[in-house]
Image (cartoon, rainbow, N blue to C red):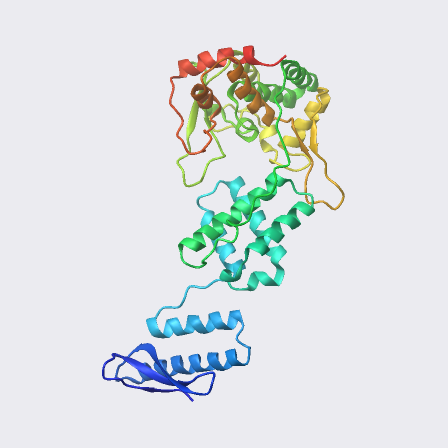
Length: 400
């Protein structure tokens, strides 16, 4: 049975414990030697815990979870502070909580899905200590996700999310190895986004006119704004009247796809004449600054069978445009059907047309709001006149 004693050359309590081979050994408890009863009690608890751990190890009963629990208690006894330990699931969930204030809504949703899918894949193993996570487990998750039919690019994003979460754990000394960093990304399955031709854009505008009503006029304005500003679907459909300066023929766009921790950048973009006419033709009853210019389409959700993208897909079908299926969805598959053409193609079309027209890359990036290859460089600032000149060349760069 463990016991404690004083050593003249030490300010902490020492203990004698029974080792695995039955011999007696002296160890330092790390507990400061004081005259009070609590000091002795802590030192004796420390010694007893170490002795019990040795006994459990000799019987091959000291599993990882129990060892972590004992070590945590020993650290708390000797330092007064508990050891920071997490299960795999606990850490990943805490990481998500911390990201709620820094990630944009869409990015947070993707992070959440990736982490929830990984925890579900691990099952009971997700309750094991964080530092027991292995590269093989991450690789198994990657392979399992690919087998369900998910696109390689989607699976690669999931691995990137895990890498980021474990990188933070590594910085805090919670793990020695970032298991996800040692896991290769999934093979890119070649998903691409194609541009729309001049003929297809004309067909879309005619389809919007034939659709008629408020929705038809809203789609016409959305298409022209998407083409001439290169902005994303949600940013276009939810733009408000206050964003327009019709005297200067300018539009101010605050892109939603930005980190929450960053100051939201507002792009000032020239308003194309045809797009401006389409906007002014919108039969909005309320043109107050905080009212959406497209009250019908702005109420749609981003996804879903009747969301923004799905509704635009129906308009493309009406226009007779082949969306070009890239990936099909098989029965029981987690993957989704993907197409090379959609509203986002207008963003690609704008960038491509500007390049074809010989517009300087940095000017084109200011018009569309694109970031450079490293995604971190700040946009080069240009006068609105320079952007207007570039915008005037855009249609000339469209493919026939």
